[in-house]
Length: 319
Image (cartoon, rainbow, N blue to C red; front, side, top):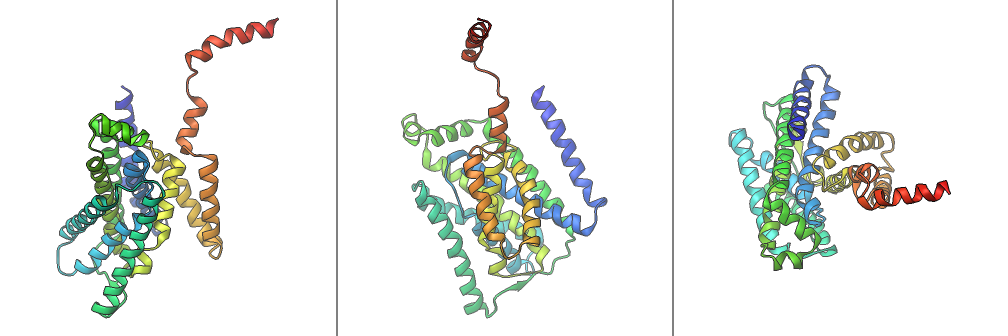
């Protein structure tokens, strides 16, 4: 009953969001596109990092790969096929990265993931300037803003559905054990390497598709636009703020933070990065388990021990 009610609420919200472009103006639609994109990125990031404890800063590497694939192939292939090619490239890169680096842990993986994003940006920049003879590319596709929004909304819904399904499978249980103790996981027969690679690859494909779908919105793309490190940091902060290990946590974190970041970037363009860093520190110290985890801690049911001790405390107070 609880699951059915949750699906009904989710379907109602999805329907309302789907018809929103019919009632809002261009500016509000632009906000919805950006918001839906970050909800999808944060949910995809949490799909791997939130369940394994591996903090990745490679989000923008896959996001940029998707955008540049559309920029390069949009004039030679049908748009649906370009999206499939982008997903395939993201899959191949994620497999190579996963096989080479997912044996790393802790700060080493964080450093490598950040370096990967910078490496991809530099390679694309070198190719564009040295081989192609130009720094950026134009994208001319007959896609309106509402078409981009509906694609992102469908991808966000699919990401949340995949997250919900994985949580209820043996794969989800294996991820919980890996996050707690990889040594224990290996002793009970879990294939740690391939489990992590499978989740990392799935997460990377979704991030790649977000970049590919959003690319026509810019018309002109270059490395500084689609490989901005801000994308990785914003995604990380949003997921942590909402609660990276919860189904709805990344989405709940992305909505208020995206609106806040939009206001900060418009009101304080010269101090935006400083404010972003301060906000990250505040979230880590005050909300280590995110908003959802904080609410659960405050309103969770009392344990049996608390119920046993309560009469004793009441009796002492009466005396």
